[in-house]
Image (tube, rainbow, N blue to C red):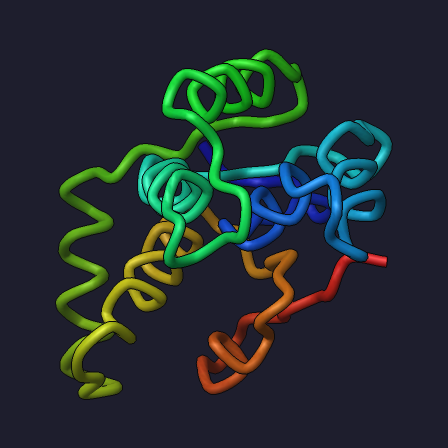
Length: 147
């Protein structure tokens, strides 16, 4: 599944802010996810897992979601026709290993690199994120803050 030139990957923090009604980024993040005019928005199982982990944790958010509410948010998100889930295939795993050799990252940065591997395998080079610094060190990717 190769992407079109208008497609973006969506980082977990965008989902989190779309879910947190009291956050100043809520309206923009929510509108982004609902807006099909921007083309296809891609996520991965990792993004869904990161979202769930964050939104249900009292260590990460002030008012955590109940597990069922987090699942319902994900189900709603997956119901949008312009949002697609990219698989974590063997090709993604192989690309991740190449990227690990190339960049030599340590610790939690491996999770960002797995996102990069998923994106690159499927030809997606732009990511909506509120943490552009997590990706600006990777050649060929463009991090875009939702606005």
